[in-house]
View 1 (cartoon, rainbow, N blue to C red):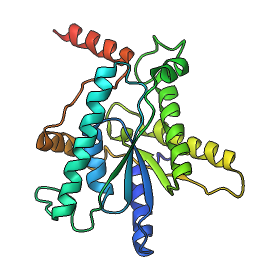
View 2 (view 1 turned 90 degrees about the horizontal axis):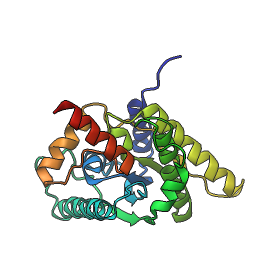
View 3 (view 1 turned 180 degrees about the vertical axis):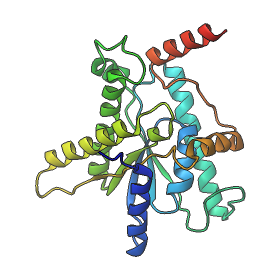
View 4 (view 1 turned 180 degrees about the horizontal axis):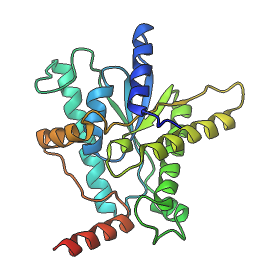
Length: 236
């Protein structure tokens, strides 16, 4: 079975939208500003983008509020570029649109309940999948409630995240929410992506440096932080 190139799938969708002169409403689940940077630089050319910052997996509240503040700072900087039509050093141009943001509920208990019993599973395993399911299902719920046509996530930009798993979980979240809405409800569609492709991850590092963004070296939960600290200790 051939492996799906989710980056090309996204490009195909964008070409279809352009042919129809459409600018769909997109809810973009974001995990942090550095991961958002390239995604937003790219997507704001083709979509009416609103960021959904929903990350109850960030188990330390100080870390959570630091990340959400950086996300808002980045969005404000991008929006000033649109107001001024000043895109020097950027991959965006005159088609770029301003970006909105919705901050989801921050309730660590939601995350801990979902991953209970999986605390010792290595990073990238079933605990992470449960975390993706929690966050992307909530994104799909908000997308349907607020009238977005599409949703997706910045998580696929990470070299440590499995794009196959994320795209599968996203499609399942759309199916679940659409099933709840019934035949007469407005459907939401998960937009396939693999933002790390075409040097997307490299570009996110460049943009993080350009905007002076805070970059963390772990995903967010205490389990991933502890695993990262063990790895660093082993290499010292």
